Amino acid sequence: MAHPGLRTLRATIAVLLGAAHAVGCQAPAPAAAPAPVAVQADRLGDPRAKMDRVVVRRFRLRIELPDPTGWRPRKERSRFLLLDHADTGSSLALRTWLEYDRMTARTCEQNARLFRELPRGGEPLLRERRAIAGFDAEVMVAVEPGEVTRGHVTAFGAKGRMCLAFAFSTEARGPLRRQVVEDRLAMLDERTLTRLAPVSGEDDVAREDDLR
Image 1: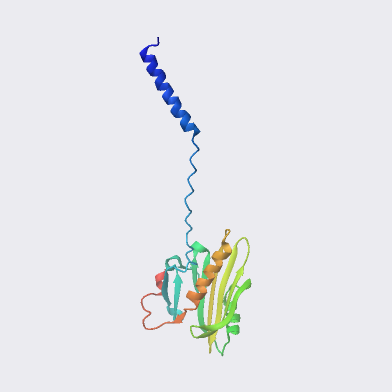
Image 2: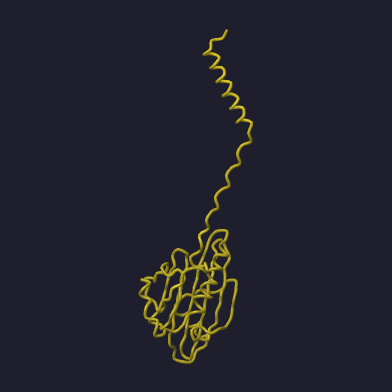
């Protein structure tokens, strides 16, 4: 006759083995779905990006920039206002000036390119003539596909003897690089270049100095 304590031990072992068998027969729990990866909105291409107005006093122009805190003036002596947005590999060159004769958009472009190298070429997405800040301007939006996709928006305009030059360039890498570049070009064309305007009496709050 088995000792009562041994019977109790055997019963306990049987219960444990039965429980283990039941667990082993169960289907494995499905793996938890991975959490969605948050995609960070591009700081220059997002239509919800914060826009801020800056007055460029030396050219008497008002310009609106997406992600204004990301832009920095380039430390370079130049006839142009030169701004860099380091986080996105973007840059902006802007200038107005007075010539000795009546000008056209084409002759203003020719003279602007004598002052400094400005973007040109690429696959055209848009080419049109329109009024920019009172200037009769020729606007070009283009993309250069590649492992590093680049794009630019340029505008050269004339108003009597006055000339305007605007050149934005940007670049992006990765599988969505073309879309990223095109979104930035659209923002800078539609919400910066198109809204470029002469200064008014109300434009004394934000200044070019605020970007420094």
